[in-house]
Image 1 (spheres, rainbow, N blue to C red):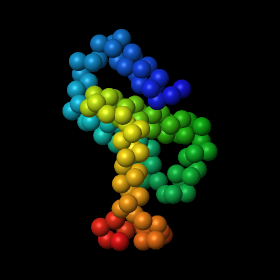
Image 2: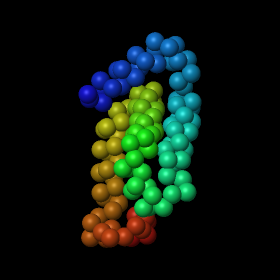
Image 3: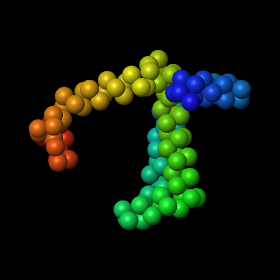
Length: 116
């Protein structure tokens, strides 16, 4: 399935339930943050080793996958409502990051671009 097909299904799901009235840009952005918080909860208070083990547990990895999907779907709705293509925006941002983080300065460091 392509992203456009997924968005089409997502909009049909929303419209069949008459939820468009609630899907203002503000509400969608807030909901994205809430879902991102739920994604964070999947690893809250866990060590890196426990997080790695989580991936081997069917129920926990399914929960992780579903929380990622919730964030992704809300991001698609935010972009759609704001009138831009999310894939194009991500490609644009990646180009910007390539300029901000040249390999010769950024390789092996977690420093912010303004500190390179």
